[in-house]
Image (cartoon, rainbow, N blue to C red; front, side):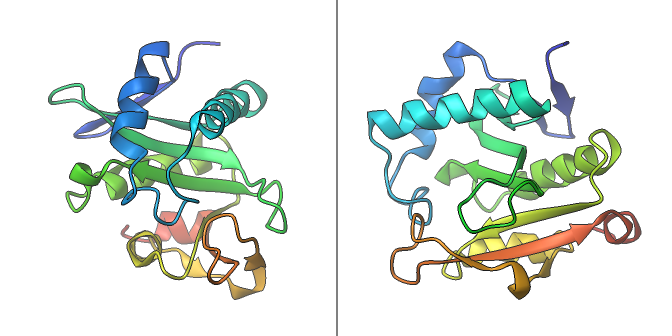
Length: 185
């Protein structure tokens, strides 16, 4: 299988390389970035996350890919697709997700990368619907989901306290292929 690489106007979404992990974790394993993702990850959690990302690629042909800025080749974080696997959630559904370092927030990078990932979900990977998961307190994340044209799916919300122990609830948004194609996201 050829290495995955997809370019947008300002970004490259691509497969992971060994040298990506250190800058990824330096930029994203911070209290601000990890606030709604279970807190700063220790060594064991980082190793587990890396293995899961590589396993998604091997098993499904997609993962949460590296997001690299074209201008300076900086690793901004990740964005991509996986099969939803959170306990209690919509297991097996195509899921879009992203995590960018704090200094990349508010510049449209997450929307650019997520839009590309949704295009890939529907065009390359044949998804009929894509979900996105977050917690109620993560207004930036679900705000982006809404800007992407995704709709709240309370019927798919589920209990899981890994990310927000205060509420213990994951909220779900989704978009169908037809809605993505007809939208102006």
